[in-house]
Image (cartoon, rainbow, N blue to C red; front, side, top):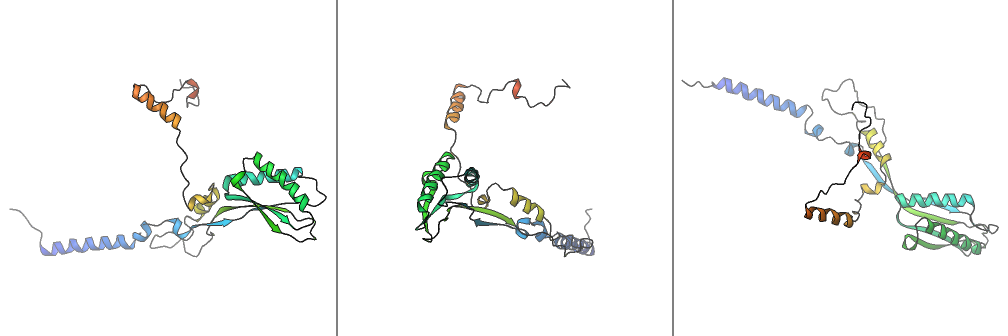
Length: 232
């Protein structure tokens, strides 16, 4: 004869199951299971405007070696993380206007040598005092910087935590390291456009595929990933 559980037995099992589920909900429940450091220690992305001032005093005949080094470094930084045009502001109405224009020509040529010209440069004048004999040229561009929240919150007692939750500093160092390592923080605001595909390589691979040939790149002994041949 088939045996069946009595009513008290079923009630006990139901009670045990409900207690187990309640324990799971209170101990590392849904809020802890979905924990993400990006919510408690978010990375803020802000706009920044780096500037470079190039002296253009009336006694100056052209760019100095130090000026050229500074412009080269500024141009490299712009190409790495700059967004929008590189702005070159020249003084207008000052006593050194002629010198500033001569310096501007050299700045323009130097930027062109670095691959920055045309629509990538925005030339704008700014009003300077007529008595100013040293009004400089000002180079600037827009970039993005990433900053994470500050670490060091030791308010919780790490030695006693019945809920087995995450401490306030959890993930903070990782977020700060990530903010420091991002090549261009603008990628956190919006993704970059895809670069064009290699049409020549794609055509070559399709051609081999249609002919039934091997499409993989041929390798020789110099392409081996083996570090040592001692065990061979």
